[in-house]
Amino acid sequence: MTSSTSALQSELKAHRVPLGWRDNCSALLLPLNVCRKNTYYLPWECEHDRHAYE
Image (cartoon, rainbow, N blue to C red; front, side, top):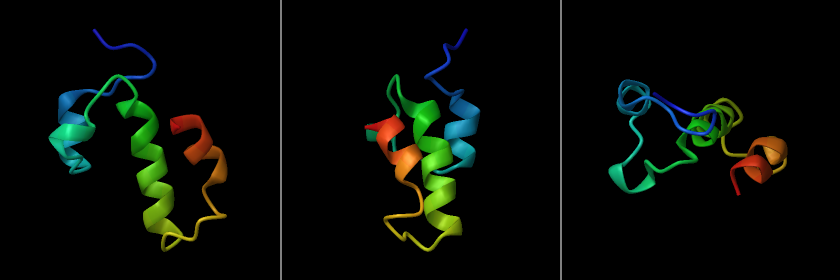
């Protein structure tokens, strides 16, 4: 059973999240990494996702 802030292990594996980053906030990291990849890591593009994760 997962909470709203944790992702399934299969999702984390599919998104290639390192084991050290798989914590209780892992569900917030997935959309942040997708946004970063889609915007070529421009720091101002994913501010909302970054602040939600931090």
